[in-house]
Image (cartoon, rainbow, N blue to C red; front, side, top):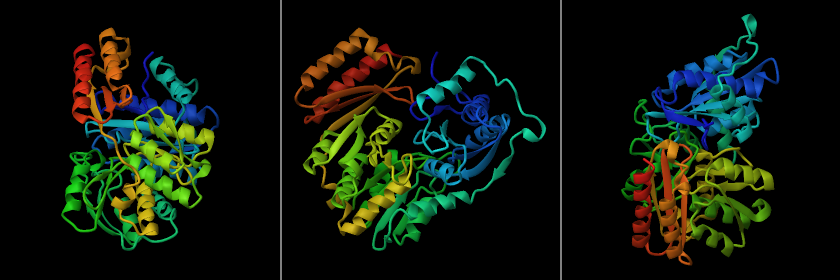
Length: 449
């Protein structure tokens, strides 16, 4: 039986793969598994990003949730971490976000949070999947006054904004930043929060129209904010993705400060303040080897997980760590929120600049980034996990690993959300690495189409 849930909820092309019928079932059975099977009533918070399909899927999702007796509070356009926070703050039973994060507008997704604001563990997702994939249904349905009700409260996003502002004890006066909100979920809250903290903010790509989310902007296109930074003196850049759970920064000269560097900056700063719990930062296997070297030089331990912020979070919860994340910009400050949070990360990063009096470029010098080549192989979605079973592909990967032995590393993994296999090679000779990565990608696209 195939899985509906990837590393970050259920995703697909809206109205083709992720249909209203599927959204209804996810709402119905998600609410039943999380809430209605345990208690007679419950309340679920629903937020969404700015893409055009959000209204369609939200209507179907909410119909499913209310059909099993759960009430819904819909908060409108909101960052993913806002839903995670509000579930805890309002003592709701669960939260749902309708978003495809950094993906193009034709995609959408549905992801759940439990009553503690955490993404669901595999076993809960599997329980929801069983109802859908095995065409099961709940045994009894509510009628009359027991059907769920819907309330609308768009002001709750402001409560989240006030929360992220409260995570630092000083203002950000003197800091100048250009923010790219990707025409996404943080198009209002990010600019408001940073302005209210006293920073000098210029916002770009902050006029969503339902179709322009992530379109040549945001964290997947940091070159956009980089160009803006180079045209102005003393500004840094902050680029969010469509649902604002990740952040990529740009220093005063326009050079990218990715998730690895952000974690290195914040981790070493917390250690200097004796606030880095258990002296450890958690990252994924995709982190640059320069990250591990930098933290080792500051006598900070690193822990590696599979790719996906959910796996980073699992490690942090298990062993009581407070900082972790991904090179892609999902950073988790577990003392403050239970998921990757782009606005929170931006505030924490700018706070380090304010406290130290250093520029972002000076702070980013804590880590030297080693050359890293990443090429995506576009394959049939049903075949993306089969590359290791193909003898020809497997042989080629081993050949490249042998060439790179002692000089770098090779990492091949399927995307959790897209029909892609990601081939990453890290080392010293970028030309050589790109050639080897392309050889593997070409084979995959030929044999896994």
